[in-house]
Length: 396
Image 1 (cartoon, rainbow, N blue to C red):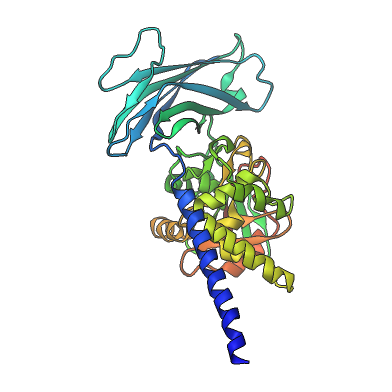
Image 2: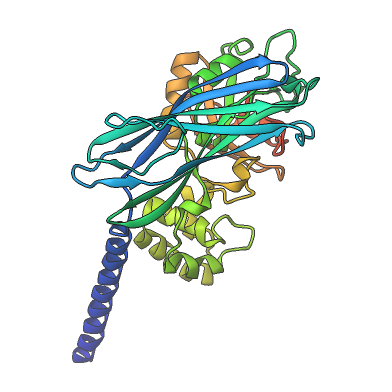
């Protein structure tokens, strides 16, 4: 009987070797795929009210090349503005202008963006301006809410020609912070709950400042201040347009096995997870998860693929305008909670809540009563629509 074991062992060893080489090939192919080193960031945004029916929004963009040697062309760049408001915006007009501020070449007077080379470890800049106007008698202050500004630009170099699409959200109106006089507390299970309204949050917002500004006037020692995982993620800039995602064959194949309502059921959604944790981990998680599911043990794919597998929101999964983007879960939520609790003097938690009564505490500061959060948040006081109350204060 003993000699008969050797062919089986040899087969298993060879199979393991082939599988390991296949995983290495997947990882190498993923990491060596064509990519541009250029990074785009925006800042310095200011909203100026010229009169009741005219607004001017000004900011800047920086394009940085961290690569030590590669030179990359930026032959095209344009702006695509989208206004969000609370009524019909048919009469509102928007115009945009990009003014290059290259360090070594002067901008053209006509505003034309000429193809520019961003050399290794160099940067270039441009001023962005958006003019918003409406017919006489229109009060833009009460009409407009948010400007969603997409930056469409092309990277051209050894990797080929890549179309990039970034976006920044610029608030045009901000609600008043919560105060003891206006706070509308709700009774919960051995606690009271206060949903706190904010402006529509985005990557220009500092999470610490948002918590302090909107909730600082009402919280007191013993309270727990919670923030939704998606609002925190978008403030961290963890979203991108599906046009920025190039699905691999693995993503196109495996996405078909997920439930149609899952954010991993699209090739771009699953590719976002692959880009985050790597194709080898996703494939192994899928193989082991499928095998364990066949014997009645479910949910192992999400455990093995990592926390982001549960947190990624595909398009339509969040409030406009993020409903057209893929949003990842927040980065380092535990460290965020500890830092915010030390700065504010109250417990802080990052949560994921839905209308079905599901409450998941992603992270919380030390000493936070998570049982209290489960009771308080089960009715979903923040809502999932356009309430814009990403902060919820829980008081025992």
